[in-house]
Each structure stands twice: as C-alpha cells, then as structure tokens.
Image: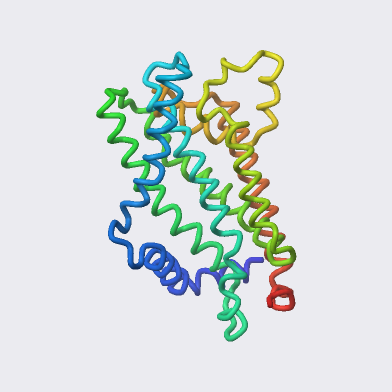
Length: 259
C-alpha cells in the first residue's frame, strides 16, 4: 500500500495533465465555457427558490441562501461521483497501451469537478453579500467541510468505479439513486417541515450530515454541532478506506473486464 501511494505521487504530472485535459474537453467548442459551471446550478437554484419561496412558501428566512448552501454541498458529491464512475471505462484505450496507476483516472475526474465546485462556492459568497447574509468567523470551517466532501466523494467514486467495470448499468443506477436521495435529503426543505416520526430516518442518510456541515457556517453563521462533524468525519474515513482498498485490490483485474 505504501509503495502504491508513492507511485501515485510519482505520477503527479500525469494526474495534473489529465485533470487539465478533463477541464478543457468539458468546455471545448462552448461559447460560455466555464460559465456553465455557474449557470447550470444557478438556473436550477432560481427555479427551486421561486417555487419554494413564492408558491409553496417554506417559512425560512433568506431561503435563497439556505437553498444555495444545500445545493452546493449536494453537487460536490453528486456531480463528482456521477462523472468519476465511468473514469476507467472511458480511458480503457490508454490503460491497455501503457502502465499507469489506474487511480489517476478517477482522481483526475474528482479534481476537475472540485475546480468547478470552488467556483460555485465563490458565487455562493457573492449571493451571501447580495442577500446580506452574515459573514462570520464560522466561514473558516468551509475548507474543512469541503475536504470532508472531497474525500467522501472520492471514496464513493472508487466504489462505483469498480462496480461499473463489472456491470455497465451502474452509472445509470447511480444517477437514479442520486435523484431519489436528492428529495430524501433536506436540501430544498428545512428539517422541521417533516413530521416528527420521519425525522429519525434522516439519521440513516449519509448526505444529511455533509449538507448540514456545509450549511451551518453559511446559513446559521455558526459551527456545525460536534455530532454532525464527527459523523461526517466517520463516514468520510470509512467510505474512503473501503473505496481505496477495494480499488487497490481489484486494479490488477481491470484490464480483463474492459471491452
């Protein structure tokens, strides 16, 4: 395992180039380029904000910031895992020709997505200024929250990547599951709108802890409660460890399942 980690470090230039290539290909022949990183979620945000603040009318002060914070957290995980799941299959031609640590492919997808997410977080801060949300010292927790999201989504991506190599339907299943979990996570609605008997069910939803860890400094202007941070940390450590070990053990067999 130590040798494998050192090998990844040796291939850091390849990792950087793959990440850069991923970013270039994503916006090639696009008039607006990187602006789509912001425009897509912003359009989604504005539609949801209009529906749930003007029509259904959740009684949440500064609902736009509440929604934006939850949506930014969700996209950090959902977009990353959805894209990285097919990273090995999409690069099978290169994998067959030369030896490289296969880990660089999902990791480059993760890095490229988090470049987009960093831009989106900056836009969120802009919205906070426009809507007069409080800028407090608790915002210094945001980098910690992003790191938790990063390693959790990386670990989850490694698990789905291994599964996708064996069963190509996995990418579609992952997309459907994320659609379901989006509405099962308190992103567009506050927790207190749920009947009391359903609230304990959220404790079994891992995404709840990441959304709340990110939302607390932005919307509540305070650090997340310790139990949220510790639970998110535990989920991150376990998911990343399982994903990394699974990927490491199965990597040598990838080439036999690529076609």
